[in-house]
Image: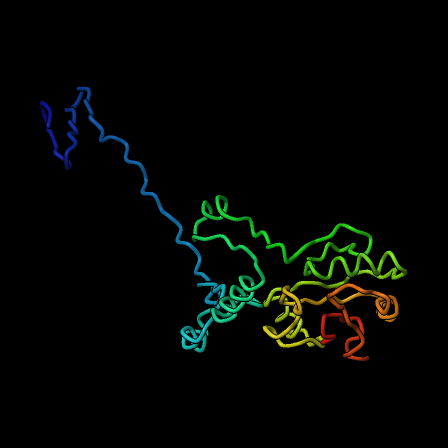
Length: 225
């Protein structure tokens, strides 16, 4: 064969040389191999979603087994009750639903009805109804050497005690959840000693213990219950 016999292969031209002639080749540009992307592993069914709280509107979804409920998550009703209790106790709650509103708003400060005295008889820094503080200060100065183990509690903290099976009033009904006299309560160590010391207290607001007997000997309030 004389001359060049061109062959068209797609868009590339290959020229075949005749006998004794050089060949000119124009090769197609290199083509990168296709990218293979690995698919994400399937998500376990129990991780599809996590719910922070639950109420009656989500009962059906829960019954279908599609949700994982966080342990101890309060219902909407429990949250509303705790907010109501906090406001009754004088707790100033921040308004709004953004982080900025929390930073700019009130800092969860309590009213003058709650104090957290820094003293040897309150080593755990428990918040206490303000009217109880001077009574315990007097008692400590007159022979009581016990300490406070519990003071003001939120609705949710009271509910946690109920759930744990501890002897306690139902959440929403405890003197520990209130602060205005005759509400308010503390639990203390050396309760028998405190009862004896308080016999000499002449203040207008009385702190009474021992009413609940062996069931709850450390409990003190204006009424003893």
